[in-house]
Image 1 (cartoon, chains in turn purple, brown):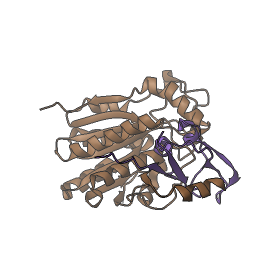
Image 2: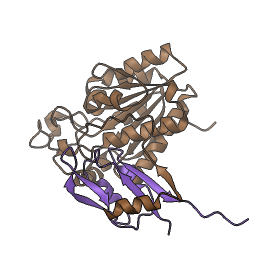
Image 3: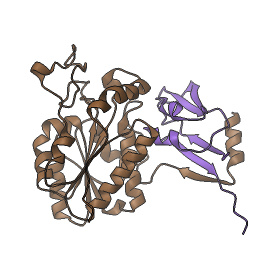
Image 4: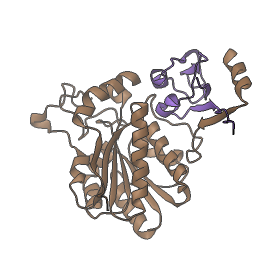
Length: 76
Length: 260
C-alpha cells in the first residue's frame, strides 16, 4: 500500500470535522487541545494514511498539505 | 508528539501531492467552520494556477459572505455594488478583452438583487464566467429567506417554513439562464464530497477554457451549505444538502457546447 502523510496547519483549522468524515482510512481525529482561535483542530493519529487527498479536497480552510510516497522506479 | 517525529522521519522519499495554491493569499478565511465558500475559493484559484492565467485574470467580488474574496484571492480583484458584479464584469471584459473575467456571487447577490444584471449579462452573451454559490439562504445577515430557499425550509424570516402559496417558489436561476441564447456553458455542481469537489473543479476549468473561444457566458452554479444559517453542524448540513437541496437542484450540465 502506498504510504502518505498530511500536515495540518493547526492555526487555521476550524475543527469542522469534514476531513474526518472524508478520510477512508479513519486516520484523523479532533485534538483535545485548542488552537489560538479557540477551535479544536484536527490531527493525524493513525499511520495508515495513503495520501489520497480526500481530506484536503473537502477542507474549507485549505489547512491540509498532503505528501505521498514516491513510486518505485521501474527497472529498465 | 509521535506524529511530529514521524513526519520528520518521512520527509525523504515523499512528494507533495496537494498544497495551498499560490493564487490564494495567506489570509485566514473568515468563513464559519465547514462553509462551502472556502472550497469554492480554493478550486477556483487552483484552476487559475493550473492554467497559468493568474496574471491575466480579473475577478469581481460580490456583496455577501464572500465580500472579502479580494483579500483571499491573490489576483486582480474588483469589488462591485450589491448584485452588480455581472455589470462590472461586463465593463472589465469590454475594456480588457484579452483578460479572463469571472464574478463570484452568492444567491442573495445574484438571484435576488442582481437578477436583472445577471439575466441581461447572459442574454448579451458577455464572455465572462459567473460562479454562483447557492446555499438557499442569506448567510451574512443572519439566515433570512433568499429567493432560492426551498419550500417548507425554515429560516429566520420564515420560522414556520417557506409557504409557497403566499411567499412564492424557489427560483432556479441556473435553469433560467440555460434557456438564454447568450449562455454557452451552464452547469450545476456541489462541493459536499471529495468527488463532487473534483467534478466542480473540472467544470470551472472547462468554463475558463471556453472563455478563450469568445462564444458566450459560462455559468457555474455551486450548491453549497450554510451550517450557521441552517443551524446545523457541518457534517449534518452536508447530509441535509444531499437529502433536500440536491433533489430540487439536481447536479449536472444544463447546457454544453455543441461539438463542432
